[in-house]
Amino acid sequence: MAVDGYILRLENVTKRFGGLLALDHVTFSVKHREIMGLIGPNGAGKTTLFNVISGVYKPEEGRVIFKNTDITGWKPHKIARLGIARTHQIVRPFGDLTVLENAMIGALFGKRSDEITEEEARKIAEEVLDYVGLGEKKDLPARVLNVQEKKRLELARALSAEPELLLLDEVLAGLTPTEVENMITLLRRIRAEKNITIIMIEHVMHAVMNLADRIVVLHFGRKIAEGTPEEVANNPEVITAYLGDPALALRFVKKFRSGVA
Amino acid sequence: MLEAFKKPSFYIALILIIVFGIIGGLGQANIGSAQLVANGMDLMMWIGLGLAMAVIMSYAGYVSFGHSVFIGLGSFASAYLIAYKYSDYLIKVKMAHGGVLPAGTTIKFFIMALLLASVFAVVTAALVGYAVLRLRGAFFAIATIGLNYVVLYLVIFYLNNYIHSLEGLELGNPSMGLTNINFYWMHYVIFIITILVAYYVRVSKIGYGLAAIREDEDAAEIAGVDTFKYKLIAFIIAGWLASLWGVAKEFRGSFVATDDFNLLYSVIMILENAIGGIGSFTGPIIGSFVYYPLKWYTQTIAGVFALVILGILIILVVTFTPEGVVGILRRKYPRLRKYLE
Image 1 (cartoon, each protein chain N blue to C red):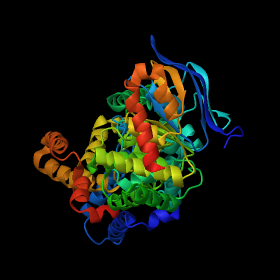
Image 2: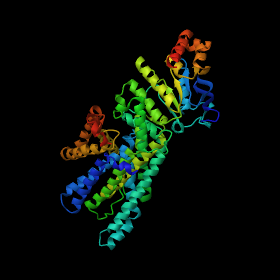
Image 3: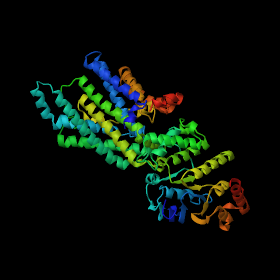
Image 4: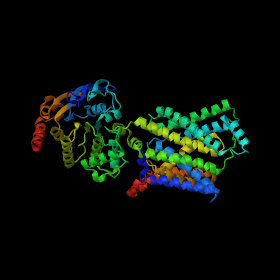
């Protein structure tokens, strides 16, 4: 953990694609072990931000600081080994490999990649697969899984890397309401039991309002708001840009906060 | 490292090493036919070449279409040593020993050829791989074809201008006075090296990394796989192994180094992997057991039409069984998976 209590700091991160300003001087910090929600309309730059953090894109300006190390412009595999894992919005399982092998790759090349043995990786992968509810399917090729299972596999591969920071890119998208509830339960468990900081991009409002400690709102590449779910739901600019109906947003917050606490 | 060789999937490798050892033993003791030794040698070479290709094509998903360049380099390295650099010396030694080269000298030169071939192949693969492994799919394949011709014409240029060989192609055979069984054991040594290396790469951590690259390179990188380094390692190993088979071909054949740059070798190596199944160590082995007898019989029966049959086979395999024999076996009999690494 960083001395100041922040595990990740973004300073003026700016990313352009030709004339398009995908990220416009985005600055925020994520505290150790908190869940940070990242919301905003489609095309707001959320996934681009993840791509900058995980090293897929190099920002034109600004810095990404993870645990006091400036990782701006590092290659993705180096960033992964430092302890940042992510899932993909559109699932990307290694289809021909078994579910277990998928998770093992997460472990073999994750945070402890320099020292981990195959046996240890297998053990971690099996534990994580049981944890996310894929234990029974571990010997199947990943391509035969359904959407929900593939989302869980993405999560398993990321968790097997034993990351300190987990970037979740719409893990709830495309799931049925029941599946969404199951996934929320799983995320809540991860928060309670594992020493992991999470940033989650999510459009399923009741989930993010309920799970997140704080929320950052992006709109056209700019950060337009940051705060607790209640603060964000009441922010006029956020309501205009994204939420639409403040009463509905607040109802989500109240319902789930009281329901769970 | 040793754990890798204790897995059930190593049984197939072990069985092959034993079977080809027995064939060699029979040949050495003059039991069984000379044809068996010749066929055994061919089959070892095709399995070996299939496995060399597998490391880059099947494990990592990069089809090295010009992979024959490494066979050519290995064969050129041997031809250079035996038929040019040390040819006078070898003839002298041969004369001094009543026209037969002593076993010690043969072995020494075999090892020297393997080492020089390895240096050529590793340096070429490292330099070229560094440049072309940034390309993906068809572009990588095309770049390797270019590589094959660049190196071939450099070799021809060298032969023409520095060795002044008559046709610029042949170096002339000093005839080391070796028999087929000697060549068989040379093949066998390279066979064991190839099997062990290709197997180890498949089941070790490198193998996991390469499989991830084959399935989704960007996701692999984000999962922490140093994709460029792993692709480079795979390309160097694949090139190195193919170059060893160039040495085997050159000792057994008649020192026509440039013939070994023929793209047809690449095509056959690719075909073996396609028949057997992408992504596995067993695939190219099964592919060789399908391809070689078929080639042998069609050549006997059909002569030049053997290539027509080969072409048709490629079309059929790619159309109807893209997952290959191993893919089908794994799907139908999941229990076999642990043996079919």
